[in-house]
Figure 1 (cartoon, rainbow, N blue to C red):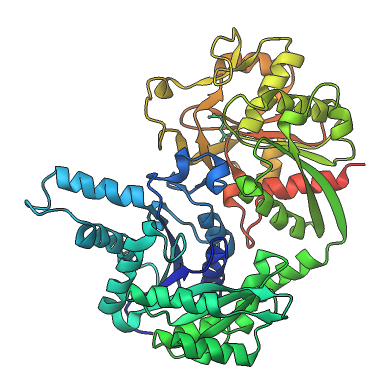
Figure 2: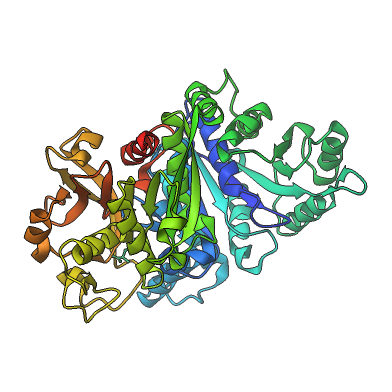
Length: 535
Ligand code: GLN
């Protein structure tokens, strides 16, 4: 192929939630499986500088990259599909665009010009898109434009796409994802919303090259021809995207529909061979043919919106497949758990995961769940706040420090077993100021963690302000808690575990951000195995 980086834009029409992220990740997977280097970028039209300050109820989980960027959860899909790390450059919001334009204006960089949406905001957007191309690491940059065509806030992005299409010519193609609603009364898929959505794009000066059409039923050749005719695309460029039983099926659907082939053609690349998806299909086979099922409870306070724990749920899918097992997750609201009902509510679970989170709501329920898991030998896995709660539970019920707490929940506690680091004490801005991104973790010998990782050191991603309070270290050690993972530079406790328990592990970091189809996370794999082994 030519030297030039190729740019693929993915826009969405008709409605939100059609799965642009999954389509983008699936196309990226197919290109990668043909031997190309690919990365994906998400442009989000909201004004928050990043999603770090958003409540999970707004847009689901906040995904954290190695370099400590707090990003949209779609980046998690990109990493899980491609097994390639993303970074801050892979997620840009309107807030960030405006922030940098305004900073430039304040520095006088616009030389007295009136600063405007076109060209200044659109130039900034274009620069962010081309930034990844300039690294020279990738042959393809797939850019997913958040929102739906027609939204006021995504207009500057569509305008940037229009300009880039003009500038880049053959090095650029636009894929538009739409919906063909099915009318059960007439038994028909309807194309009108798609036609209208393409017309809207045309009004903005963008002719999509490929249409990916979500549909509940197969799209016959008549409909394909009709869409092609009304939307100025080739019949081959009308791609059917049926509902899939798992997101991991979508690359295979797209392979059948030859989305990769038509994309390469549109970019002027000669198509040779087929994507090498053997390993991917092996994983799918294992996913579809589990030898057993295991029930695991996920205790959290955002359980009404499952996207809040996206990466955890996906990690269980990866870890389940490796173990030839289907993990059946039971989403349990921590606020619903009390001393009286915990036994009943957690009955029959073979493993209990206590989720990350912020603030006091639901804390006591999490602590009850942990006490139950500890006392009844149920495999336990605590992540971030989940680990902090395990420390609090142990302090209260084993060390006898009745008022032990995290200073986050009770600033006045006389036993702050979880506390703020000195460096966090004077922070006033909330955005981007937590302990974020990858940090090394030394794994102590003769511990379960060491055995699971089979290594003396690892790195894991963080997103928290509070830490295990090392003043209490000796007391915890004496009472039988092992501090099995330590940050080698700061001495911070990163992993805790209990000896006289089949599996009791808490981690201050977020292993779920690093689990991919190709490399399921060892802690999840071991936790699922422990759940399977539980009598
Ligand atoms: N709220 C806790 C802290 O800030 C835990 C954060 C988390 O679970 N990600 O330390």
